[in-house]
Image 1 (cartoon, rainbow, N blue to C red):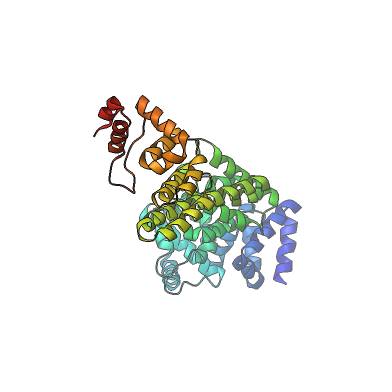
Image 2: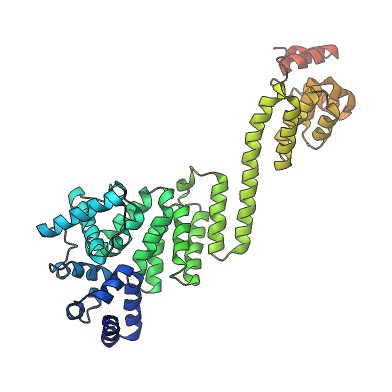
Length: 418
């Protein structure tokens, strides 16, 4: 019966649009709604709240549930001291939460946890160690969801507390933090435009994973149009030159493209999401090829047959990578398969490589007149790019000098001598 009385009084005191917002806010906070359903003090609450919309907040109701007239004070003034009895209750509930990791069973306990956060702010003078306090003992972020819905009624710098959580909590807490952010917004009785601004301000500098988790958490409560608009703003920010890209410096390229794909999908941009997925697969193939390349080098001397299989897999992953083709071609030539190695070299429009391999491997020179011509030209112009093959201890400079001497290019030979 109390709920019917409550709904009737809300409709009498506010116009329909505001009345819907008030009811929606209280329904969104289960502990607050349960209190309203079961409290014997509903008439006292109605008398106190009257038609003052600022009092029709789940946070104010939570303070009302504690008694002691706390709901009548402006507790955002941190100079106000709490009664000793309330401090004792705050301490007991917080310690029990640390020991058990259980969420508050009723609105009063949630209010006491919120008051713990107020006292933490008074004691510390800032929110710098907030995340450590929330997660101490067996503490979990979901335990604090209702407390954070109440907290704006208790501190003057609630947004600073939220900014601290966004900047300090690791990605392992992204899903829980996203749900906490959404919960706090939907119980705040603000219109859609204001909710959009709140989400955007809190998340514009957040890690992409937190942006994604928050957008997903919005789905049961917000319109698709709002979610898409917000996702598009995050995408636009990530693509601007002055965007804060430093937050992704420790991410793999694959993960960055995955996140871009998810954001694009949430933004309703399916084509862009598909492109990002393709980029993610390409990046994954590049990473796998890099790992396999190191393995191939290790196998070349101990197990040439396995090395060859590994090189084939590398080229399957990266068929257009000229560096891998050069390295595989040299492996083949050095391991008595010059024909296949020569075929790979033909796919590389690189005169310098052909000249170098013609110098290192006479078998190539015999079958590839173009390679020999490239070598002659490079020696004549002194543009041969020399180093040392991984299959020989003899330097390319020494080989070039020998080749020039044997072909009676004495001036070139002297210039190439080590």
